[in-house]
Structure formats: C-alpha cells, structure tokens
Length: 246
Image (cartoon, rainbow, N blue to C red; front, side, top):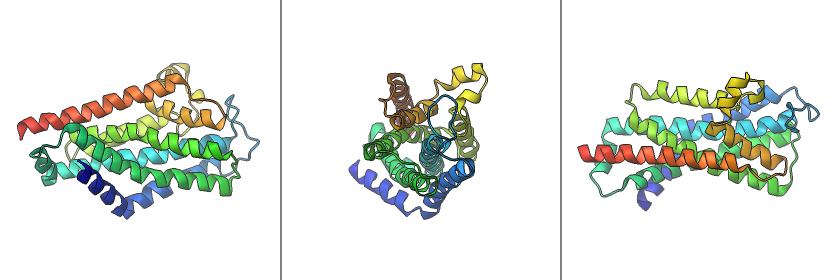
C-alpha cells in the first residue's frame, strides 16, 4: 500500500498541465471577483471584507478543483486501460486504494491553496496573523480530503464516457450551492436551508471561522467528517465489489 501511495504522489506531481490549471484558475477567479473591492467592502453580516471572504472561497474552490476533477477522470481512464483490474488481483484492500488516491490528490491541492493566499496578500493586501495563515492552510488542505474521496467514488462508479459530465454536475453544483462563488446569504431562504448542510458550505465555513479568530463550528466539522466517511466508504465498497468480479 505504501508503494502505491508513493506512486500516486509522484504521478500527481508530474501532471504539470493539470497542476497549472488547478493553480492558476482559482487565483484568476479571485482577482476577477475581488479585483475592484477594497478592505472596507464587507460581505453581508459576516464581518469579513470581500477580498478576505473570497480568499477562503477561492482557495477552497482551487483545492476542490484539484482533488475532484483530477481523481475522478484519472480513475475512470485507469479502469478502461486495465490498471485497476491489475490492482484488484493483488491483496490491496479497498481502504488502501482509497487512501492512495486521496493522498495523491492532496499533494496537488496544496499549491492551489498557497497561490491564492499569496495573490490575496500581495494584490489585495489581505493581512492575517501568522497562526491564522497556518491554520487556514491546514484546515483547507485537510478538508480537501473529503472531496478527494468523492472523486475516487465517482471515478469508480462512472464509465469513461460518463465520468466527465457526472463530475461536472457535482463540481459546479457543490461549488455554487455551497457558497464558494457567491455568499449563500444571497440565496432564497429554501436554498439557504439546503446549502448549510452541504460539505462545501461547511468546508468554506471552517476557513471563515479562522479568519474571524473563532473556533470552527462543531456542526461544520461533523458535516465534513460524515461526508468523508460516506464518500470514502462508498469508494472502498465499489473497489471491493469489482474485486469480487475479477
């Protein structure tokens, strides 16, 4: 299992084209959204300036892009090429497969988070305490594992032809409804009630709590923990199910 984890991390770092996309894309969106705003422009009743608010949103979105899109499509291609079948013939347990894919995706998500932070600090003069920068980086990075597990599940469930549209539905749906592109408070009340239970909403809420100097809400942590267990468990079950067919 350790060898597979090292292999997945190496492959993630070698995929320069995807790394470029996942790093530049969220940073460009941040500048597009927060480009004309200053530190006095507040977002609703959050107490955060617009650049600070969307810094967390776009860092979270960048990590989501790296782990979800990368995992799902790569796994679907590996299934078609026969690589996953070879793995199923080994004693590798389902949890080992999910862990390896999740670890590889996590490596590619860290640069996108850090670049958004650097752009926000250099261009929009976002200033936080040292502990807040470290806590934000850790929370968003660890939180991205939830969506890495979702990517594994989608990649193992969908065929090569269907994986991209299915992934895009989850990708855009979770991003928009979770409030990564716009504050969820701008939604109708019924949609806000749905959004607050989504893992992307809880994901961004972790970072915003840290920016305000508060501890993360227990509800947000619980939503992310339950989501990870469901996604990772589903991915491992799909792996074992195919193992029985091998």
